[in-house]
Image 1 (cartoon, rainbow, N blue to C red):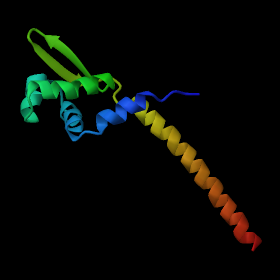
Image 2 (image 1 turned 180 degrees about the vertical axis):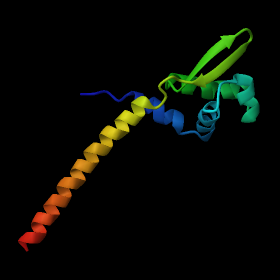
Image 3 (image 1 turned 180 degrees about the horizontal axis):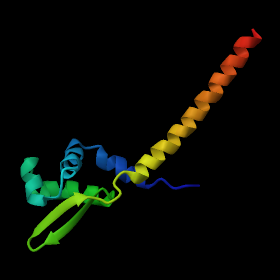
Length: 110
């Protein structure tokens, strides 16, 4: 059976509006931790906690240059999640198609 443990981290990371905002901000380009803290009016400690969760989910990558830590989006952010959603959608659509066929057959029998 295929494991989807990564979804817990992914959807957990996306459950917070600040983390979604960080991802949106990084979609425009890299930013330092300090810039993100200022942008979201948070302490460095607070923003680091959010970044850590995003890193654990593979959505953000950080890199230290000198004394500054920069954040950017992960290389394949949302690829695994999108693949899971597409697979789930195909399953639901197939079930709905079978339901439609069943309803058509039973309608013609009456």
